[in-house]
Amino acid sequence: MKKSVFTIALLLGLQFSLSAVAEDKTKVGLRVPNFARPLVEKWVAEYRKTNTDVDFLFVSGKSQDNNNIISLTTDNDAVAFARFAVLPVTARASKVQELIGSHRFNAKRLKNLFFVKDEFDDEAESDRKEEEELHVYTGSSQQSVSRFFASYFNQETANYKGKKIAGDDSFLNVAISRDSLGVTLNPLSNIFDLKSRQVRSDLALLPLDINKQGKQILSDGHLDDIIMLLENQNYSEIPVGNIGLAYNHSNPVLDSFVQWILLYGTQYVHEYGLLQLPKKHLAQK
Image (cartoon, rainbow, N blue to C red; front, side, top):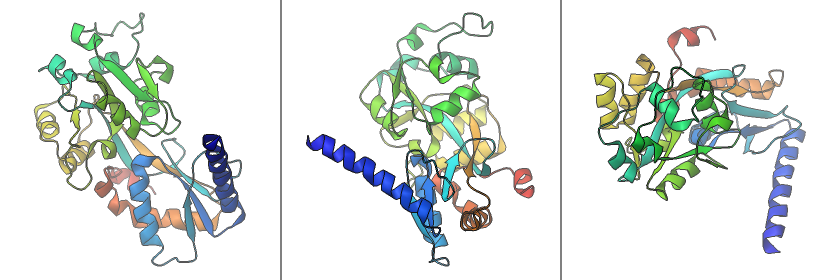
């Protein structure tokens, strides 16, 4: 009974918050995947130093009225402000590391690890016995980077092997921590401690078959070096995509905040585990 009452109260609270945003033109709703939320919180704090008349509210779920809401999304029609990278991981000291040994994953083997093999795919590589033993975990939410990862490899999310985890992608780290054979994928900000700039103490990167420089930098596991590497080199084994802002461009309050982000907010993206857009892209804004 108490659980039902709590659930109803939570849903009513969410509905109220979305309604409040829709009715008050000085309120801005922010729909943000959790891996980018610390960055957006930084934006809000800095923006409100000179724009105290605007209130911000983080919202979740869908709303029929998006006139006052800014969504962070990987959709192509969004106003891009940064890039994000996705890496495969397992739990530190897991049985996965023991099974893999010195083996490294190239793009084909990485695709083979996470997705059900297409019998008509001539380029598919045969599974190594050790890889067949691994347990794959991916996200099922609309905001999960698992959707982007699947698109990058020209796959449907239905083609993922293993178990799909609901909720935020940070729950994927919890899932593999409970399974010594578990592997998953996550954006950099969910893999690295943003203060120490090192891989989180309970995680380990899966080894990738890339060039010598890339192998060394990934092995060292320092976030800023990896960001610099991925801003200057492309690897088929490491999906990198744009993240942008989708909003009602005719709303002056939203447009003012977005313009501030593009002018001043992008200076913080490295701090929060994101990559800068290429200079060519920035010049076109």
